[in-house]
Each structure stands twice: as structure tokens, then as C-alpha cells.
Length: 429
Ligand SMILES: Cc1cc2nc3c(=O)[nH]c(=O)nc-3n(C[C@H](O)[C@H](O)[C@H](O)COP(=O)(O)OP(=O)(O)OC[C@H]3O[C@@H](n4cnc5c(N)ncnc54)[C@H](O)[C@@H]3O)c2cc1C
Image 1 (cartoon, rainbow, N blue to C red):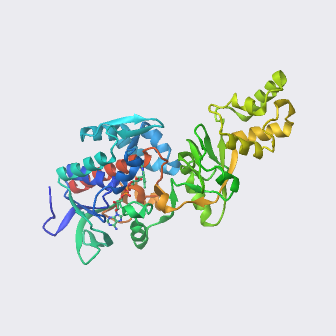
Image 2 (tube, rainbow, N blue to C red):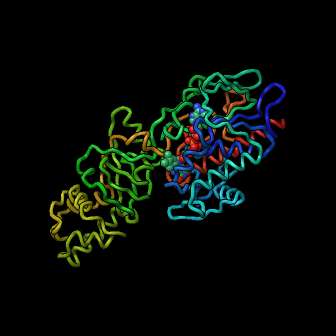
Image 3 (cartoon, helix red, strand yellow):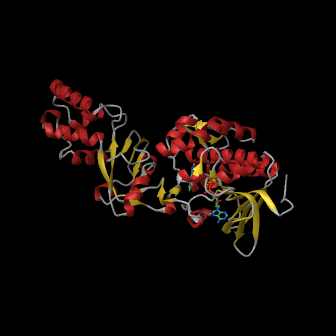
């Protein structure tokens, strides 16, 4: 079906042709709705094109439940339904059906077999067009308000369109050059809806400590990163590589835990990340092993004894930082010379090297924006904004944020699917 009805209304207007908007438009059109997509930039799916180093990590090998769990307890509750309706396996099947077969990669990632993000974007856009959705590119929405039995959507300039149902899929405000400049937050606030303060997330971190920045270029692969105080954070720990940088700490392990750091920085607070280089050994067990080793062959060098436990040897300068935090100032020390407090300090530093972090490198480097439309404003079974008939919201615009690894596209697609089904059902009803 194409075009507006007698009164000039589209069944559905989708604002934003990113991952969530493209999926929703395609599926709603395929289910019989007349759909118009309004996209501010000159092309669709700009973030899809840039994603995964232009390879697009489009979903995950986790099942729906496992994927939802990575969005923190509130996010998990909200996404449970959507991840059941469209689990990661269904996303892979859908892309297979669109001629984009996928392959698994390390760290639970899924990429298109072609390794080209463009194929993902093209497949979604052309599926939408084939199903009858119409696209207006270079059509930035300026404002919106309820009108009659629907919504009037004003474009930049004097033009406007009418929608029986309006889907907001405008994303957040990171990587503003891709079109996402936080417009949705303003509209939501004007409608009286509650918006959690946006902050940059999945973003490299800044450290005030010289010793951290002096390690720039050093990476650790086998490490678990934790928040010093993990009680109030959506994702308290993550076992992913970290990379020290001129600003502080980067790599997925650090970026995944960025949101609470960004929130603390809003009021000038510094947080601590703990790097556990031996995540598979309990601290007590490690200490026992060091005592035992000292009793058998105490002349072994401390550094050598530690290497017996590490899956990968720590780079020399990183090891020096660990020793310094444990107040062990000589790396030629042998085990038998370690005092008990030194041994305990060493275990503490290896199981939780304390890295102070005072902020992030900002929206220009952030893969997503955390915060957004409060989840209790939205019905998770339909993506409908509860207080405004005919209004739907999907994707990153919501207060939902998953870690790196295809989780954010997966959530965007799943919410798009849920919204499309609800849009088609409400049209029929
Ligand atoms: C560099 C980079 C790499 C990434 N890699 C991955 C990855 O590999 N895997 C993964 O899962 N996630 C990745 N992400 C995150 C992922 O891109 C987002 O989570 C996802 O795109 C969110 O989808 P969305 O549809 O909600 O928003 P977006 O994809 O951001 O789309 C929003 C769209 O709305 C449009 N828009 C905004 N304002 C208006 C307006 N006023 N009028 C009309 N249109 C408007 C924008 O131009 C944009 O096209 C990456 C992000 C970045 C920046």
C-alpha cells in the first residue's frame, strides 16, 4: 500500500532512517501499512555504514534472554518481550532472507559474511522500498504535535505531513555528524515526557592519573574490568580487552563501563575502574599459591612467579604499574623476600589494579548515547508511548544501552519489529 488516505494521513510516519526506523518501516509496510520515512540526512543508515569498522556487527551469538540481560536490570525487563519476538537468531534469518548471510566472530559477534556494512544498510532500505515504504531524504523534522486523530509533523521549512501513527526513531546525540543531534529529547520534553539525562557511552575514558596516560599504547587482552563501586551501575563488570591511551583507558572493556563514569563526571566526581588480570583465580587462591611457591622455591623472581598464573604475560610497563600499586619497588625481588603486606598488596593489584577515571572523551567518540526516554513511559509490548495516543518510540532514543558486540543493533531491530506488529494490529483494529 502506498500514499495517504482521503484526509491526507499516512498510516505511519517514521522519523529517522537508522537501524530501528529502517526495520520498523520495512516490517510495517510488509504488514500492510502505508509508511513514510523522514530522514534528516541525504542517506539512510549512516551509523550502520560506520558501524563495526564499516563491517557492521549487526547482532550477537547470545540468545534473546542473554542479550537482554546485558542491558541492566531495567533494560532487561523492558526488552524481554522484544528479544522473544525477534531474538538474534531471527535477525540472522531475516538478513539471510534479504540476501545478506552472516558469520560468527570472536566475542559473541555476528557480521555480514561479506564484511560490508553497506550490504546491511542496502538490504534494509531496499526491503522497505519493495514493501511499499516511501522515503524522503534530506527531510529533517523540526517539530510535531497531535492533530485530529493523529499527528502533524513539521519539516525544516514550511512543509508538514500528517500521520495516524508516528514513530520516533531519531537515535541519540553521539556522532552528531551522522545526523543524530538530540532532536528527539527536545520533542519528548515538550510533550511532557520524562527523559533520563543523556550522557556519552561506549566511549573511551579520561584518567587524571599521569601513570595511566604514560602507558598509552599498551593493551591487555585477558582482563575483567569492574567498577570500584558496582552497586548502582547497569553493567558492573565486563571481560573484554582494554587499551591504555593518551587520554586514559579505551578498548571495549573500558568503553562498555563508560556510562556511570560519564554520569559521575556531570557533577565532577571521579570513579575507579578495577582491572582484574587473573579473573579465573580467586584472590585467596592466588595468595595461597604464592605462599606455596615461596615455600618450595623461594628464590624464583616475583615477576616469574606471577607469569606462571597469567594467561598472557603482562607488558613490562604494565607489570611495573601493578608492582608500584602493590608497593613492590624492585622487579628483581624474589618471592622469599616479599613481606606479607607486599604479597597481599600484589594480589590486590593483580586482581584489581585501581585506575581512576574522571570522564569520557565525549559525544564525538561515543558509539551511543545513554539516557533518553524513560522506559516507564513506553509499553514494552508495542513500543507505544503510554500517555500519547498514536505515538511510538524505538531504538537509542529510549533509555536503553547495551555493551559493544551487536547488542545495540539487536535491540533497535527488535524494538522496530515490536512496533511494526503493533502498528499493523492497530490499523486492522
Ligand atoms: C562508530 C559507531 C560504530 C558502531 N558500531 C556498532 C556495531 O558494530 N554494532 C552495534 O550493535 N552498534 C554499533 N553502534 C551503535 C549503533 O549504531 C546504534 O546503537 C544504532 O544505530 C541506534 O539505532 P537507531 O535507529 O536508534 O538510531 P540511529 O541509527 O542513530 O538513527 C537515527 C536516525 O535519525 C535521523 N534523525 C535524527 N534527527 C532527525 C530529525 N530531526 N529529522 C529526521 N531524521 C532525524 C538521523 O539522521 C539518523 O539517520 C555504533 C555506533 C557508532 C557511532
